Picture (cartoon, rainbow, N blue to C red):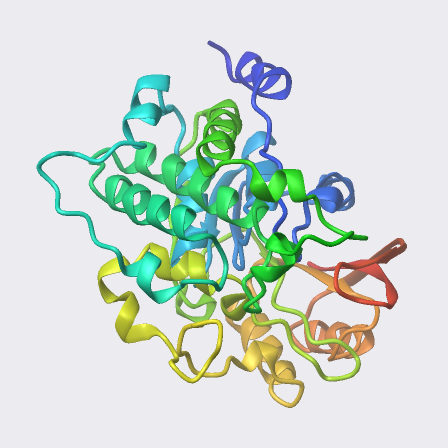
Length: 353
């Protein structure tokens, strides 16, 4: 098959899955591509990969793509959708994950630890079984698809699609609601899981190149890419940073099931994970982090996804890029309102080349 035919097939068949992930750039990814498509590059690093929608778009456009994220569960998503170019889960393989194996003594850590926090008792028991069965899978790409489907199933059944609060009562109270979808929340995990496996299967394709996934701090990555895409955690103009590990700690924990108990902050009502504060969520330290990152990848074209009301300011980021001998172009979207925020702002793309 010719490379052109391969890409034509990608456009008509492969499709990025739906996502409810906080901060996802899925609705902006075509706009981002239109801003950078005339910049010459062959290799690209998505340094803060998140959902993987940008990396996936680059893979579709025939670029050799490296996805990175410091969170382990996110890197698994990257393995399923970016590095994986052929493996899918069959209906039989999917169905076999739902049942207990006779040769396995299943743990009950989720059922005991997270009672009345995120899910019902029956759902917690299901998660103990499912996470154990997925961990026993031997094909890394099939396993990554199964993890992806479990992550998405966990998210869709959560109020606000987050794990930031102990708020199961929002699902279970018999009251009228002005938000959320109780039908979706109460749909069995198995139904959601099958649907997300199908979405992931439909997203798998090859662009003929060796795309790969990293699970590193961005500062530890070798600077050998034509382009580096930077979509860091966001610090708003009031100094509040977005901590994705606090938002999605349950998903990070479930992929490290054996060590999960030792990682939990027992002083937190919602059993979040202990972790050091990140410079990317600090209003006083984030500018130095940008300066460090821009210098680290100074030989690459740098593409920064940002918001119009972030800290540091757009003008300051432009100055930092220019200090690394970059010519800077700035693109701005229409105003939008973000989830869990009462403010509107513009999505901004800063390109230094």
